[in-house]
Length: 152
Image (cartoon, rainbow, N blue to C red):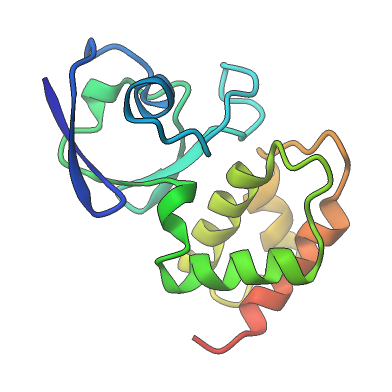
């Protein structure tokens, strides 16, 4: 039995320690906002924050999380930058199919947490590992800039 700190709540999960965090979240804790995309940490759909850093949950073993706090798309809106990013996402009408958006929002929030005023190259670098099949990259960049411009 593992105890995980997820979205500021301690949750117990009875899974093998080598299970990817993604499957513990989705299949055992019913936190299905984090998506399975590629399974090899290349698309970014499964991005969550662990210890304040964006990570690909499809490649992180749940046993390797330890006591670090996990924040998923279900909890990111309770953070100041997460709330700004989610609001900017809606205002810019970013989602098209929506499948990649949880990972995109998690990466964008991590960017603003580390760099409150990113320029285009900062945004491109931070978001490079998040793929969008629908190609909404221009709207994603606009939403990140709009979120950065909002007061804290």
